[in-house]
Amino acid sequence: MDYIQSIIFLLLAFAGIGLFVRNILKIKRNILLGKAENRSDNPSKRWKLVLRIAVGQGKMLARPVAGILHLVVYIGFVIINIELIEIFVDGIWGTHRYFGKILPSPLYNLTTGTVDILSFSVLIAVTLFFIRRNIIKVPRLNSKDLLGWPHMDGNLILIIEFLMMLSLLIMNAADFTLQKKGILYSCGFFPVSNCIFNNVFSTFSVESLYIMQKSAWWFHYLGVLFFLNYLYFSKHLHILFAFPNTYFANLQKQGQLNDLDSVTKEVKLLLDPNADPYQASTEESVPEKFGVSDATDLSWIQLLNAYTCTECGRCTSSCPANLTGKKLSPRKIMMDVRDRIEEIGRNIDKNGNFLDDGKQLLGNYITPEEIWACTTCNACVEACPLLINPLSILIDLRRYLVMEKTAAPSELNSMMSNIENNNAPWQFSQNDRANWTKE
Image (cartoon, rainbow, N blue to C red; front, side, top):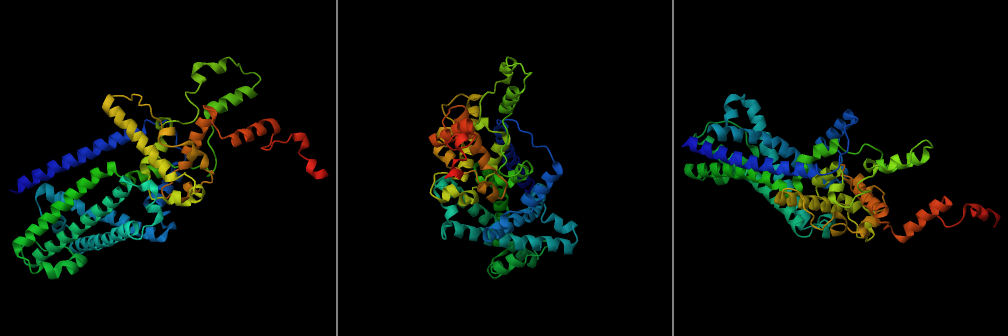
C-alpha cells in the first residue's frame, strides 16, 4: 500500500508545482509587457543591496515591533523548509524520517529541535500579527485601501500559516509519542511540541496517535501546495519577488529624475546648429507617447515593483499628502498598477492578444487628484522595506498629463509660463526683480 501513497504524493506534487509554475509564467509575461529598462549596471552594489535589504531584512527593523515579528516568520520559514525536504523524501520513497537514519544523531537532533522551536515561534508571531490587524487595529493595516479582499487576504495568510505551524507541531508530538512507545524508529528532538502535547497524547492509543501523525503530515504537505498556489492571488508574492526587485532597484540618488530620451534628443537638436531639422521628424524619432497613461506604458521594473508590494502601508503612513487628508496613497498606487496589469493579462488570456477594453490606468484606477497631491518628497520610497518606488509612477503619469494632454493644474501652468517668460516662477519681469532693493 505504501506505493499507492507515494503515487498519490507525486501526483499532488506535480499538480501543485505545475500550477504554480504556470501562474508564475503568467506573471512573468505580464511584467514583460512593460517597457524595456536597463538595470544591469553596478552588479556588485546590487548584490550588496540584495544581501542587506532582501536577505538581511535591513529596513524592516525601522519599525521594531512589526520588524521583529516579521524577522521571526522569515527565519522560521527559511529553516522550517529543511523539514519540508524530509517530508518530500519520505513522501516519494515511503520512508519515515529518512534523514534521521542517515545523519549523525546530534546533527539531526539539532535540526529537528531548531525547526520545532521556530515552528512555535512563527505560530506566536502570526498570532500577534492577527491581533495587531484585527483587535488593536493598527491604522495603516485598516485604512480604506485595504477594504474587502486585501484585508481578507492578509487574514487568510495568517490563518494558513498558523494552521501549517500547528500541524507541524502536532505531527512532531504524535511522532515522538509513537517513538517512545517503540512503534516508530527513535530519532529527533522535539522540545516544544512534546512539552505542549505530551500530557494529552500520552493517553491516546497507538492507532489514534498513528492517525494523528499521518493526518498532520498530510495536512502540512497539502498546506504547502495550497500556500504555493495561493501566492498568485495574494500580496505575499513578495516572498519570491523581494530578491529580484531589490537587485533591480534604482541606484540613483533619491529625488533625481530620469530624463526622457525623446525630449533629450529634441533639445540636443534644437541646440545643434548643424542639425538637420527635417531629419528629426522621421517616424522613428517620434515617440509613441510621452509619459504613462496605462500599465503597459510603465517599465518592467515598475511592474515588478507592483507585484512585489506587500501592502504593508509604510509608504502611505509616511506620505505627507495622505497624512494631511489628501486622496493620495502610495500603497493604493502600487495596488492599482498591479490590478490593471492583471486585468490586461486576463484580457490576453481570453483573446490571445490584448483587445482594447476602453480602460486605462490613468482615470479608471488612478485619478489626476491623486497624482497632483504628491509633493515628490520621496518619503514613500524611503519608507518602503523593499525599495519600491511609487513616485516614479506618479511622475510618469504627470508627464503624460502635461505633455500629451496639457492638463496640468492652472497654478502649475502659470508657474511654467513664468519660468519660460521670466526665468522665475513669479509673474514679475526680470527687469523688475531687483526693485525690492530700492523700497
